[in-house]
View: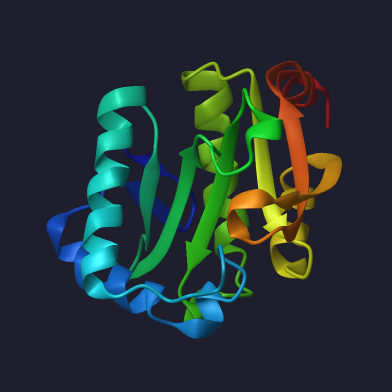
Length: 184
């Protein structure tokens, strides 16, 4: 697994001691409001999810990064690259997503962490297309997607989540590399 660093963050592999703060994150109804059907997850479900995140790394060479504040070591949440099997119409692609504890919202952490993971996906893993999928009402995630340079791709519904309305943003590797090479 890989560790990425930004000015303020360390994005690292998950450790066993991340289970408690991750379980607290997943138990917060406001954090989970726009995730799947909005249900919170208990410690056991979080532990199973953590095992799946580790398995993704073993199988694909990418997956979820635990995000911590560089100066304090505080666990803030995660940023991930995952296969969005819940929305087959966007395949083949990889989804970038994030989940942060509420106390870290509004500080640019999701954007900063996701920017590093986006670069990792396109440059280090040479992924062809990365999408990001959000509930139509999740405007905060929409702003992060736009700051990352992803462009609107489509509105749709997620069949496995009771036809939940969703918005998909996307970016290809060629688009990303052209933007990265453009003079500023």
